[in-house]
Image (cartoon, rainbow, N blue to C red; front, side, top):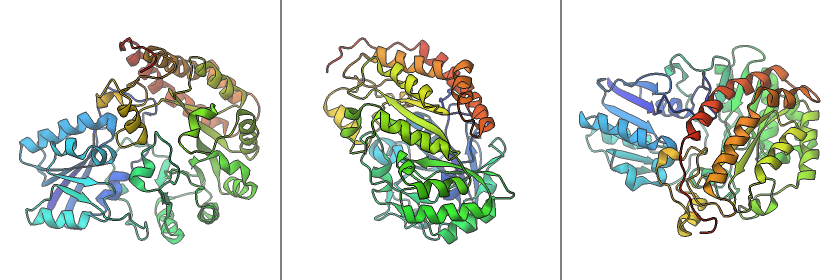
Length: 443
């Protein structure tokens, strides 16, 4: 029996604005755990919830890496390697900065793990781990094993179930890593596989299911089949979509009837010039208002994503965005500072233009300015972001958004806003004292 420890690294005293006391059950490491053969004993540790036992007797340690957590991942990896334990690094960050990450690992998984894990395990047993494992193609998603949810300990949200039904995205948003790592072609899981997994995780009616797909409506035929399937389970579900769903009355109605209560929609910017470059369809503010109203009319709430720091954002963007959110009763706004993650076209452009002044990965959490904006100073961008966060998570602002007009799923969104408020206030407090360099507006 070989022993494997899979780790999600976190610095427990550092909060992100999306943190909650009881996080959603993780899917990535539970799926990875399912790829090990029966004679492997696998344990999962989420450092946000529990301490790592660095003296644990294990044969292999696997660590996932997100950019803001990379430094902690390296620290954890180094401590195990000092004992002679083999360490494998994977995840988005390690994939894009492989040479940097390899200094802290015996082996690297670049990209998706499903098609390379069997070879990695065989090499491990032969004592011949290779430095890099990269699949030559992407997994079809057909026949994916059941994630090892039984390995998750206490501390996760007991009311949310998490499932994946598609991967990939054909959009070329400059700031997004999804098309680079998951491909620009949508891949869909067979509905029979999804049904099998839903039967395993849904225990009673009206449970909450979170669909982690980047765009649940990307393939219309698949989405219709998925909604019909979800309708049979009588669940309440949330997922990611684009505003395009509001233009398809049949699909929107099916989403409503299937139990959809909330859609995370990436508005990103209200300025057309900001989104023309990423090749993403842009909707004007007036058009957006009608589309948002249509979604609300179908009893579906909106978690809206807005990004600050685009080249055409001026210091007035913060007040304009808040005004738009309140006018349109966006139930749960989500704010980010534009962040040039390694591997994205944005990183390549800003790096080429000499505008990235901070390369400390722990600052790449989408709440800190790490580059030189074009039409405001870094300090203006940072303070504007903090003002928007503080304004929107104030109790009066929350109640104003939720109590005016139709009250779709009021209890759910009230709870969601106030649960996130605690983390948002901690982020605001932490960032207030961080000095930024005084830089000119134009590079």
